[in-house]
Image 1 (cartoon, rainbow, N blue to C red):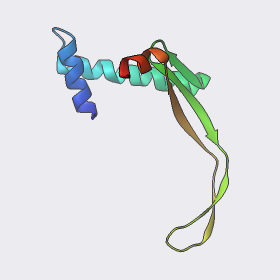
Image 2: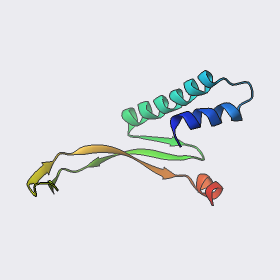
Image 3: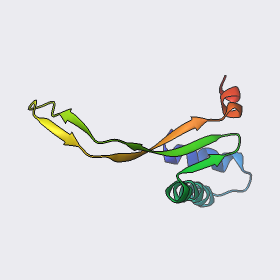
Length: 91
């Protein structure tokens, strides 16, 4: 689902909501989740799931074009674990 599709569906779910209001609401939710992850390392949304910040260790890799060995730096990634309530709705 694209952001535009999500905005359209949010607009359709809430009576009287405009497309601009739906986009603002979606942007606000994404901003709040991002801010919480950056500050505390995780964000739990009740009945939806938990976003967690994970650190990937530095490692050795291989350039697939040249076969040259390279060093891949440590990086951070966000992971998501769905809540059981969400999983029940999906099943």
